[in-house]
Image (cartoon, rainbow, N blue to C red; front, side, top):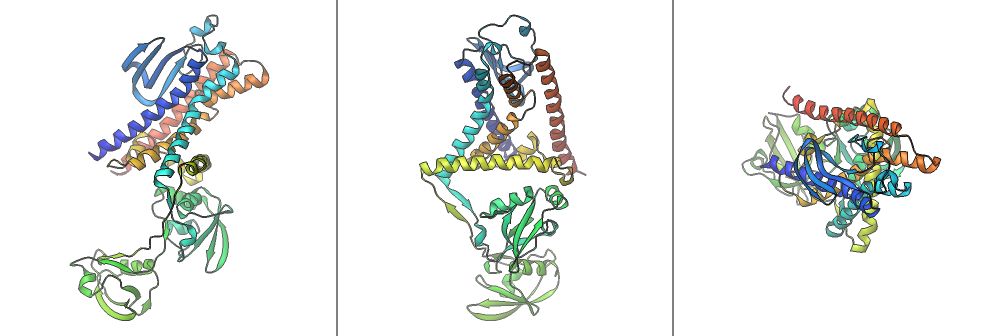
Length: 438
């Protein structure tokens, strides 16, 4: 049932985004009295699952779920239907329209994707607010594992800046570090700036960034499990662990490390209880778990927004997501980071979906993916919207249209580039599945 939910959520998100993107082309085309021959969700290579002709347009659902398209008369597109182009231009064809109208038609899909993300983020902020951990609330600094250390971070550091920009939200700082060039930290009272190495980033991407950095806390016990080693030793909720075998313990990560290295060993535990120091004794089991849960400080804060405050905040959020995605390309195309190996296709994205329905995730992911589609489609690659825009801008600046042969060759080159990228992406998905069984 979990996999079914993941697939349904992914297909629904993609379907909505594709339909709205193609509507962005369809509506201005109809407004400018341009004939739209087809409007398809997914691609109908050789055959379609459903189709119905209404007026001059055939609406349908294809079987290949790699996007969708509208086929506009008098336009060289991915269909490579050049027969119509050999005839004299008709007034209802794309090629007969002024360049500015053609530009609006081609930009329509990207604009709709951007506006959709802005709308979703606006309502999410209005309904849910913005919940995050302020960086200045981490009074004990951060905890990093061996991967975090390869990035140059140290346990106890307090993140001050990434690429010279003040780190105000711990949640954002994690991504900023992965995408950034240098970090400034408060280390034992001194301000230290150091570069983020490609080797360190490679380690992060190989583990998909799992918990290389979190926040530090005091070892104050919240829950002691029944029938556990901790319960039998006399540990109680509210106890603060201050020492092990005579060694002072100040933070939870120090205690956890000691426990992890002490399987089957007898430990003397010092705790503060109601202002008094108590001495206890326990033997760590093989699995290294003694049965306690910490009283992690809830450092999160939530900024709330009225509807009219949420509108500009939603715009700012959309721009930040777009900026982060552009920055990701610099990392992905840097072979030293190995980030390109972690690029996910449909299979990998389905695995990211929650196994039970989550509306907040649904809308958040749709907004993020909508920005991603807008960014990808505006890239100046023939066969994408950005490729058509590139040729149109050339025409508007130079005053002459590119020849049909140039446009046809451009489509072929763009198609080859896109197919190459798809092979890499699907290859990553398949290889990541194979690795689980090796």
